[in-house]
Image (cartoon, rainbow, N blue to C red):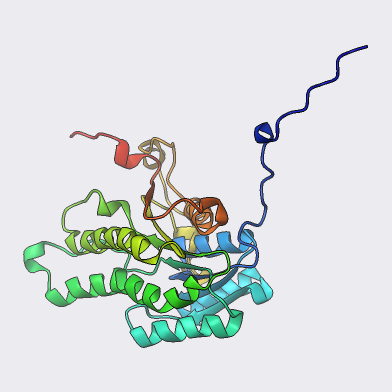
Length: 275
């Protein structure tokens, strides 16, 4: 008689993957109608969550809802993160529509990093960059925190920074300062908001967003072999890459992670380059 097979210990059995780790959760995504923000919003929906997209571009926001056909799981509201009254209406609208807030993704920002030589940079432009990229995250967190603290399984905030907080090109001081400030804001808020709310950051590198714009401006990205080859991962990033990471950080799977910055750039910040 052949010997009976031994039972595999439970800790050696692979855990079943949850196809919907954000099921029942409500996530606010600022700047969520195009680009990386849209990738994050779609990842939330794919993970079973519900999403309220906030964006200054109403046309882009409505296009998202038309294309997603997600029913009550997705909604759009115009949002200017640089104006506190607009942020208050956004948070109130989320609570009125969904009754709860479980996650916040601070993605809205001025994307163009170049402002010219510092000695010619106008103070108003400097303040505008910080006012949108950094003040916007502060305002959204400020007004969403009371609801996030009440989230049944704990709240989560993801701040979208940039690898430009860690390395720079010339004439990008205002952008770099805003994203560097966002990283400091992330770890400070993680200490203040825990344990009810976890706070983390993602710093994307080169992400091709041309195909993630509103229909009127959407196009295929023009990328060369050299563009892809310079990345240790072998390619330029996509909004899906950042969306997958954001969905993880918003989910219970990341329950022991807070105050961290996750660089998603295909390995570029680790590559030494000399002229």
